[in-house]
Length: 313
Image 1 (tube, rainbow, N blue to C red):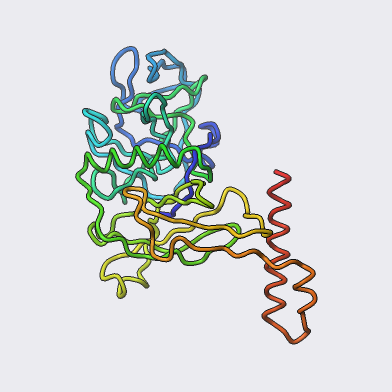
Image 2: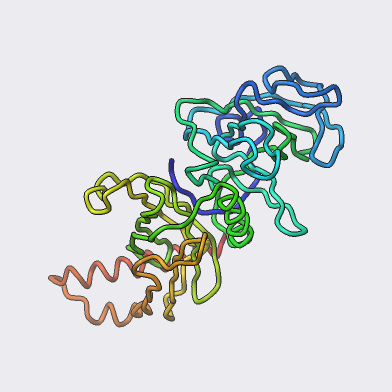
């Protein structure tokens, strides 16, 4: 799996399946006014039921291109009787889950806990259904959203996801163990490192990211790091988190990365990202033979360019 920062966004229509990330496995039963129908049996014009009980027409059927392995959600993993049977989803497929009085669209990838929700290597979840109104479907009784959701940066989903994951992990009996890892590289635009739960070897670790005390997002440490196995004694998982916007270089920033399940700080967290030196100071100290100063100046100018680009979006 490739880890992603968290936050849902709508993807392309089903006809552009190669670019979209949602998808269901053949055999997945979809609720219709006439009963449960396998997703591969649906055709354009068929009626389906939405999570709100409305009837919607299918306007397109597509196939997503090859990509990351899908995600298997075990029967009953999300709530009592939900899903009704094991549900295999594309990693970017949005699952609609309650959080208090709200409903949150969470990409299936970010629900992986290595116990009740796992990677389904060797399987395919590539069938996409486009509705005239993207109100969602009921797949094995579980509400899912169409078009698919693509993981991206953002704080809006981070807090609800932490609460949802705690609930799902508790249902599966996942108890957090000793947290190993590191908050490694800290830059104005991204963070990286690795995380490992010694009590749950090999399972991805969901991390919450805060800047100056405010949660800005979360990231799943799920990228295998074979180079660290000798150190950890079991597979460690790497992560890369792209900040929603580059941090201003004119002041200091306190960066925290903690395990979402229980708030345990990752080793090396919190970290202080110091104030960047001014361009004038860098130029004054620059010498033709000073490689370090030249590198600092290049990094400073790159950060300024990134900030300008972000401001124009």
